[in-house]
Amino acid sequence: MPARVLIAKPGLDGHDRGAKVVARALRDAGCEVIYSGLHQTPEQIVETAIQEDVDGIGLSVLSGAHMTLFPRVVELLAERDASDITVFGGGIIPDADIAELKQLGLEEIFTPGTSLDEITTWVHAHLPSD
Image 1 (spheres, rainbow, N blue to C red):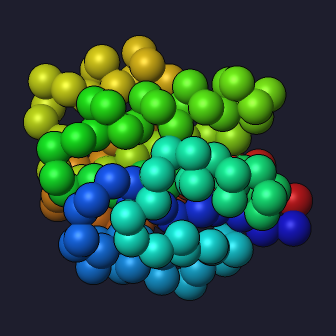
Image 2: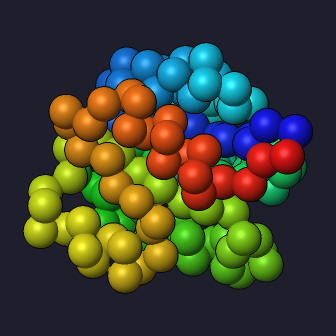
């Protein structure tokens, strides 16, 4: 069974082209992809992830709210006993924030310029699939 990945846009950020491009690349690389759409709360994202029984959540933020929204998703997963879901993120994220986000539970952060091949290779290496 292929890895199941939820691609989500938390917060008020209305720019989703990058998230859709990543979703398509993951789908084309053999993943099952669920795209949650714009303006999702961390609570909605976690609920969808659990209902859809995903292996991973890819979060995309361009608004600068990544230091609040990304860790909140990880925290809510822990509260729901779903910490086995791998969380990764991408977007306009300053290098200075990446190490802290990883300490807060994100497995990887992809910034502008990361190739789609690098993202899909990472997902295949870090998310379970049969």
